[in-house]
Length: 324
Ligand SMILES: Cc1cc2nc3c(=O)[nH]c(=O)nc-3n(C[C@H](O)[C@H](O)[C@H](O)COP(=O)(O)O)c2cc1C
Image (cartoon, rainbow, N blue to C red; front, side):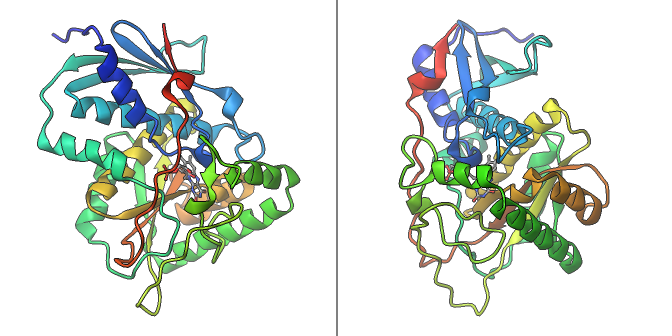
């Protein structure tokens, strides 16, 4: 029988600081945690929703799901396994999860995955044309499947062309959306502080798959290959409710951390999923109506000559962790 354990305050503050290393849309970090004697409660913070970029709050829930998965991996590395009750309060949709813990010796695999939390960066540069082994893609898909999420490897050139077309249409739509543009400049560039995408993490857009953050200051990768290459993974869920989106966020984290453990570069991409028409187009033409597209992850190998990426900032712990 599983017994809930009294939380060790300092251990869990350490785990929560690692959980905050999770990726989030425009680095909004839209979560808050309440720390009880024996549980951690995860809440969405609707005040941090990007109303123009993410009008239906999908990216916000995905970001919280990524933080939930990061928390579990961090805790496991510190010797605590967890049990999660998702959406435990039907009267409060922002209460996303209640997490209980029990002591468990960490395995080597758990320690390696936990280390990946600190190593991971969103890498927006071009990747080399080195092939991504099929076994790696299978391992990433298996990590997502554990969260109930299906991964489609967009290998087929026709499907890839449809996906790129959706990126182009969404980017075009966004150039005409004043609210979207204002939000993008407010959340990126030199104004970024403990939140937002700093100039040093953004590259000048080379095509529509790169979101054009303000003041891009990261040099593009110098590649010896005539052409860079990457792979696009599309994450889809059977439903499109809050739980499905939370699970898709957990799967996003599982894929990013597993890929980081393999030494790969990764970049989450959601722009064409933020525009209803292009999201519908991707659902219809790229995955043939099988499920709801939630996230696109670009994976590949960074050029060996590329500079290591600086970590993006995070808010101080006391801003998003509160005692119950
Ligand atoms: C739901 C979600 C959507 C995102 N969409 C994009 C995107 O479209 N383009 C992009 O370059 N980065 C995207 N990101 C990455 C975030 O900008 C990044 O996680 C954040 O700036 C923190 O940086 P880090 O991941 O390097 O820690 C997204 C992340 C999440 C979780």
